[in-house]
Image (cartoon, rainbow, N blue to C red; front, side, top):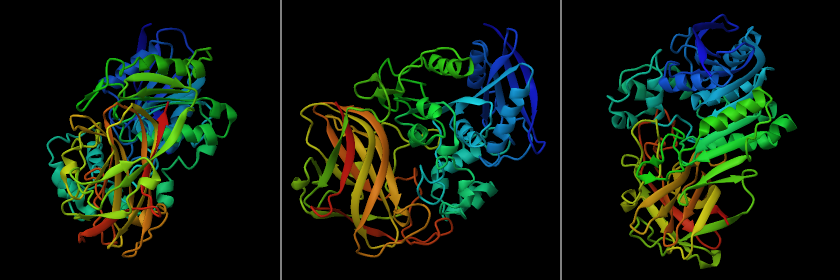
Length: 546
C-alpha cells in the first residue's frame, strides 16, 4: 500500500503553543485509526520516517511530532514537565480530525515511551493502545543516588537547544569527574537550569512526583505492548510497567491485555545480533514490525489478530526465544547464592567463593578500601547512548577494591530467568557509602560476562523519601535490586558475584562524607566490611528455570 504526507502540520496545545509534525496517511479513503509518535530527537530522523511509512502503508495515519521546544515546535524544552498535558492535547486534536476514526495509539522508545505513560495519566478518552519500548522509570529507580548520574549530562547536552548536538568532541571522562557535581555543565561551557534545579531535590518529593507514573498505575487503563532488552540500561522500567499494569491497572480489560518482549539487546532494541563482544546468534533479531503492527491492528482496527502469548523472552547463552503465558513465568524456582571466604575475597585472585548451602558459609568478613578519587570503574561506552553490556569484567576484578566470589564449574547447565536480588550485610567507618553488586557468567577462558547489577546508597537504604546516615561499626542490611536476566550458564562455566562501592561513571561517586551530594567536593576514604556468617548470610537470590 502506498501513502501520502502532509508536512508541517500545526497542532495547538491548551496554552496556545504550536507543535509541529508530519502526517503520513494511507493512500485510501479515510477515516483511519491514528498512531502518535513524539520525539525530542528530531522527527526527520530516517528511522522515524521509515516507521511512519510502514504504518501508513498498512492502514494507519501516523503523526511524527517534535516535542515542545525541540525541532520545529514552539515553546521551551523542559524534559518531561510539559509532555503529559501536551500529549493529551495532541491525542484530542488527532481524534477530532475529519480523517480520524477516533481511535488513537501511541508509539515510541526511551523518552518517547516515558511520555506515553505520562500522557496516559491524563486519561485521554481516545487513547486505545500503547507500544512502549525501553521506557525510563520514575526518578531514582534506575539511579537511586539522589542526583543525576554523571552520564546523564551527555544526554542532556545532546538535546539542548532545538537540534541534536555533537557529543563526540567532548572529553566526557573529564566532565564526569568534575566536583562538585553541580558544576558539571559549567566544566564544558553550558548552562542547564533544569539540572541545577534537579540537584536541589535529593529525595523523592513533589518536584519528582510531577514527572512520575509508576506510582500511579491504578489510574491508567490502556492495553500496552512492552519491549526492552536484557542489556537495556533502562530495562527495569519495562518490567515494572508490565507487572504494574497486570496487577494495578484500573480495569480488568487493561490488566488482561499487557504483553512483553525482551530480547538480547541494549537500549537500541532489535538492531543487531551482536552486543559488545558477544554474538547472540541468527535468531536474535526478529520481525518486530509485524508484532507491533498486529498489536495496533487488534486495538485500533478491532481485527481478530493473534498477538501471541503475553511474554516473549530470549534466553541468552542458549540463544533461543521462548513464549510464556505471563511474567514472571511459572516453572522457575528461587535459589540463593551464598558468599563465603577465609577473609581475603579481594580481587579474582582472592579466596571468595559461592556456596550453595547456608551451612557451608565460612563465618567471617571481607574488608576493602574505597577511595572516591580512584573509584571502581564500570565498563561502558563513554556517552549514555549505551551504558554497559555483556562486557568482560575480568580486568576490573584484578582490583583489591572489588570483592569477588566464584562458584565451582557447573556440572550441568543452569538457566537463570527472572529477577535477581542481593541481601548484603555490611559495616563501614563512614556515615554514607555505596554497595554495588554484580552477577556474572565466567567462561572457561576467563571471560567474566556481566549479566546484571545494581546498587544502594547508604543514606537511602530505606528508600528515597529521606536520608538516613549510618553509624561507624554498626551492621546494616542492604537489599539490592540487580534487575532481571534470562541466561543459560553452560556446563563448565562458573557463576560469580562482585561487590564494590563504585561503578563509575554509571553511578555518581559517593564521597563518603554525608554532606550535600551536589555541592560537596571533599571526600573520605571508606573502610568497608562485607559480612558472611550464619547470623548474617549475605547472598544473591536468582530464579532457575527448568
